[in-house]
Amino acid sequence: MSVAIINYNAGNVRSVLFAMERLGIDAMLTDDHDKIRSADKVIFPGVGEASTTMKYLREKGLDELIRSLTQPVLGICLGMQLLCDHSEENDTPCLGIIPQKVRLFQPENGEKVPHMGWNQIQRTEGSWFSPDLEGEFAYFVHSYYVEKGPYTAALTNYVLPFSCALKKDNFYATQFHPEKSSKVGEQVLRDFLTL
Image 1 (tube, rainbow, N blue to C red):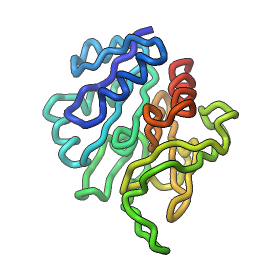
Image 2: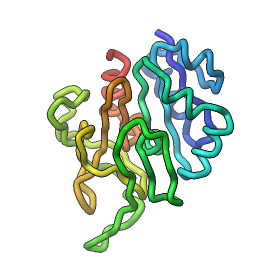
Image 3: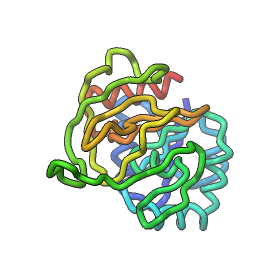
Image 4: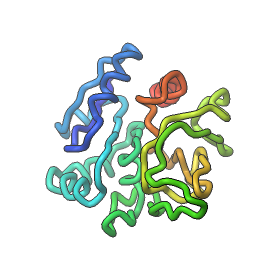
């Protein structure tokens, strides 16, 4: 199986590469359009800021490439948010693949932003996660969240219930970092790789 990890000037991509190695997958970190297009699976990870990252994607033509992909694609953290229509982070138009909005957390009871640390996953109907992940904990670091909506595949509660996973057609995504979520994260990556 060939797995391409999109290299797009975002932080944290190497930890995803190492997570693939732990699963015995020889993934490639690349921004080469042909290699990405021909891979069996594509991972779109990232830590960073939405508007700067979207500018880079546009400059490299990666925005159109990602929209055109037909194989399973996994967005992680910022990668998940950029799959959506729009982010409140610097009022950024995103890729528009999943018609949902990205909002800034507005703490109501003294919660800290960013949401950082381990939190619980609740699968929704039709989730692509294994049933044994229900109620398990994954690792989060984010100030912006994707609203609950028709493409929500799992929920987490922090300030309010938000989408910690999405699915639309061949696009899958997690707000948490599977590469930093121990055995739970490994299972999420396996679930994606076996799609």
